[in-house]
Amino acid sequence: IAAVAVIAIGIFSFKQVNEKKRGNAARRPNIVFIMSDDHAYQAISAYDTRLTQTPNIDRIAKEGMLFTNACVTNSICAPSRAVILTGKHSHLNGKIDNYFPFDTTNITFPQLLQKSGYQTAMFGKLHFGNNPKGFDEFQILPDQGDYYNPDIITKKAGKKKLMGYVTDLITDITLNWLQNERDPEKPFFLAYLHKAPHREWLPAERHYKEFISKKFPEPATLFDNYEGRGRASKEQEMNLLTHMNWAGDSKIFPENMDKLGIKESHAYDKRNYTYTVGRMNPDQRKTWDETYGKMNEEFIKNYPSMTEKDKMKWRYQRYMQDYLGCIASVDEGVGKVLDFLKKNNLDENTIVVYTSDQGFYLGEHGWFDKRFIFDESFKTPLLVKWPGVIKAGSKNSQMVQNLDFAQTFLEAAGVKSPSDMQGESLIPIFKGKGKNFRDAAYYHYYEYPSVHMVKRHYGIITEKYKLVHFYYDVDEWELYDRVNDKNEMKNVYNDPKYASVKKELHQKLAALRVKYKDSETLDKMYIEKYKELEAKGKI
Ligand code: SGN
Ligand code: CA
Image (cartoon, rainbow, N blue to C red; front, side, top):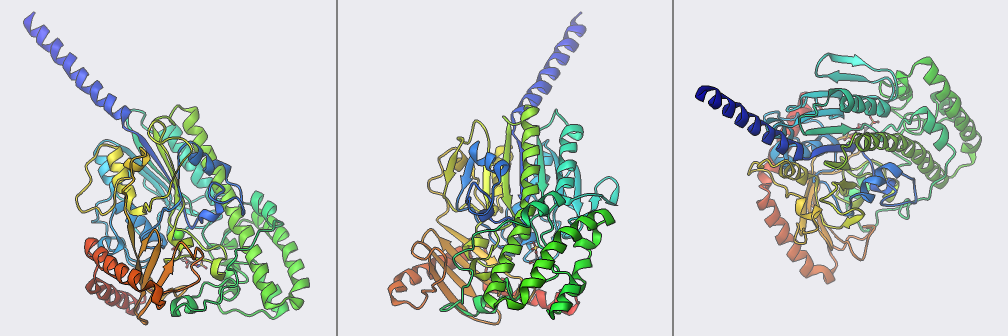
């Protein structure tokens, strides 16, 4: 009898421990991390209603918090993703630009979540050139990925070709995992990562048909002439008129370019380039050719009488039609995922984040692309909901960074962060208690000389000012007054009125470089390493 009793107690307490574990697991929040590629906050209606409507993305802010000063540490794709996953600045995680390989000996937060009992999955664009670690399941696009009929690398079955439109496909894969592969016993971390709205901006059929006839308001700085600013702003190659491709970007058919005598070095076969319309099947291509064919006809009629100014205006409209058309599918996909969570009673205990790998220029300063420390690419959208923790409809203006995600998610999951992570948990902010958050952000961009020719630079950003050092083939400092010059058109570095501000910021920047363990020695080392890659033909 005694033996039976002992066994019974044993079973009872074993069961209790197990239930307790499960109880804890059930209480730990799920995390749905949604990130798009190059999604400007100007193109999310929760931030700005002038360009487009994104009702589904906006739901996250309505039910949670809108961050109005979220920013990145290095405004470019793969480096931003590396900062997010490691919680370390680029100079420490080693992924300084799109060329350097991601060092997989870095510890990433999904690895730690997985170890602590989370089920982890990643779907969409990663852009590391190697597979993600710490994921029970992944399906990722190779490199940049294609808009139409893309290849996908799966954890289980290697590479395969999918048929359809990339944003819809990534959404379907994500919903399928939530529905059929999720382990209901475990909390989960899900990374749902869109390729859209990355260049060359190919919308889904339903959206290009809708957006091709729309007109959009121009930004105030579309015709910026960079007066008073340094060589970096003047020598970039991000201008809508002079650096966009007529064929690939604006979708002028090569035969029409010939007719009009439009020449450009690298655009001709762009229309059939792997990640443009060259991947479409005949049906997809037929509707595309018909819709864009009409636009081409109009263009042929108007082009001979267009001034340079007209051409700039035209290119801006063309750019916005396709860029915002891409975002329409992203918004629909986000809506489907949010609906799934709600329908399946998963929304109460789930943190949902919407962000981008960085901001993007939508014609401001005459530009497209990103890279610069200036606001449109330094800032990034961030909307977070977490029922019961974040008050619905709240707004926060602190300078939170993509550097902070790792520690935030680890804290939410009750996992201790490694001491060498460099961000701050956002949980106090979520709870409305983050008053004394970071007062200055550090930024460092490296990818030069390269596409778009944005010079290497680092800087400090405070609520009121921005001090920047451009280096490598220049040695120039710029200072901006963020309060009185919101569009960052006036470099006041040599204005005597700012002498004391300048001095203080120089000191603060030097202190930040020490705090984050960045240095001139590292700057030089990365230049040497870059040259080695260049010599090997890898750049
Ligand atoms: C491609 C694009 C660039 C873009 C980089 C990096 N040109 O080279 O415009 O800046 O990718 O983008 S394209 O004509 O080939 O599309 S990132 O998002 O991966 O950093
Ligand atoms: Ca990007």
